[in-house]
Image 1 (cartoon, rainbow, N blue to C red):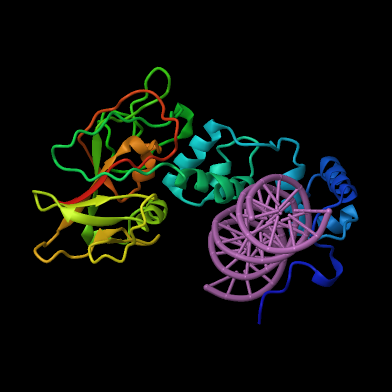
Image 2 (cartoon, rainbow, N blue to C red):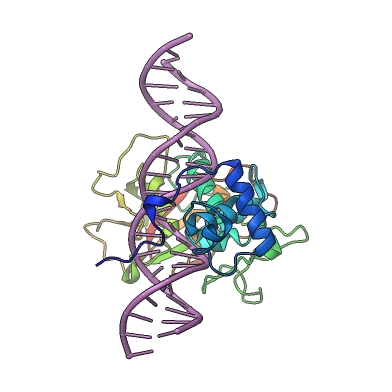
Length: 302
DNA sequence: AATGTTACCAACCGCCAGGAG
DNA sequence: ACTCCTGGCGGTTGGTAACAT
């Protein structure tokens, strides 16, 4: 037997709220408060609406402190950083954005921000050990964004938690490349939100060859038409860490993804709780105009 | 101008956690 | 300890505006 419905569906109005209903709800809540009981509220207020619907309408639209309109670049940064850190916990993310609701943030992510990220130019490049990566940078982060979390920070232990060393402008950046190490013994546990986006890029990626050190070198591209059907392609989904299929002569204990941070994503995006960094680069200044530019990526065995 | 497609976002659905009884 | 109820949350849907053909 299922749970009893929260309201009589047959006798409640559904669909878009009329201005009159909005006014009624707003007046009631401002005058009486919610009384801690949304289910009983519509009856008291004289609304033929489900209590949950009233709550949602109030929280997402009628609340006086709601901010309507487009998201700023700063908000983009915060959302991306927090999404990388905590995934689709929209209410938690929204709580860091004054005036924004979880629904707003969720919609914005699903309809715009994700596309904005995916639309970033992805350049094909095969790395060799002799490659010198260009200086790269990341979007600015502010001190109050609570950017932390990985237990294995790429930053010096003297830094607070795992936050990057912020300069006077509250920005940080990375130059050269960093190594994200994926320990195969724990594959499947890596930051799924990272793999989600990476996997979408990975859909057009493959490992074309091995370099002189027998390292499989992967090139990522959205522009190319390559598929993942190659035997050496990386198989990815949003639950499992990507890993090259076993190469005949390889016995990987783990592998590393050399990743240039030039894609301009917040460092935390690749700094999930189960990734560890080996910092081989240095931090460089300034912000990056584009959200994503996976300029270089290289996967190699330890 | 008409029609089809895409993008956007408000609203709904159903699950879950936590508190009250 | 258990059940029930409610609020909160994330995923999904549906309506419609905007754009393309």
